[in-house]
Image (tube, rainbow, N blue to C red; front, side, top):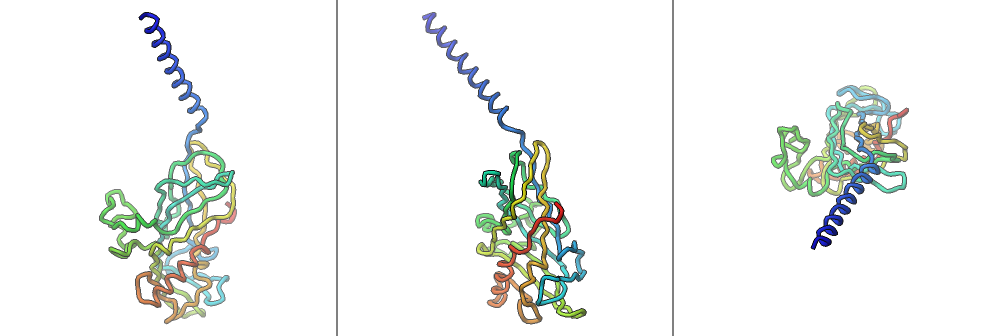
Length: 259
């Protein structure tokens, strides 16, 4: 009996030591997490936007200048590319890019070296099927009633992108435009070019990206009766324009020069 007790105690002690050694090894091999964020600039060409101000657009042959009155869009499904080419998907990542704000904290991520970032403009289909009343407005949730302007309505979901402004064909004329983009098919995946960056333990790393609305619309013919109103749930011409704008979203993102 004593031998059995002794063997049992010895086995329990050995197992305990293994757990301790395993925990120590895991702690040693797992670096502290870092933080990742997006630093997003609202641009028209090289100009950081002041609302209501017209800025020239040298890339467009269809119109001369643009101004913005309002501009917001959702980003979700943010991923970071590792040096081996695989992607780390950041769970639950979502921000609402407001025209006047630049810095957006995304999440805690594993520290280490990365080579690119990608994200969707819009919301996943499950989130898009919810409504603002299901979300917590006390915390200023970007899906709550505090952002009701970004919601089409029941059965239609959220506006993935909402913007309004005006373009000029000449030097003085002004043609207003208004675009409300949504629908699960209008959720483009944006993959940024390769660019090495490092997330350090206990520090935040921002990816600096320009959101250029001039490039968004540079190839679209806009006048008082063509492509000036786009609504994903409007009349047939409005739906066509909304799709045209949604297909151009991939053109508007590039790294901030010098970063």
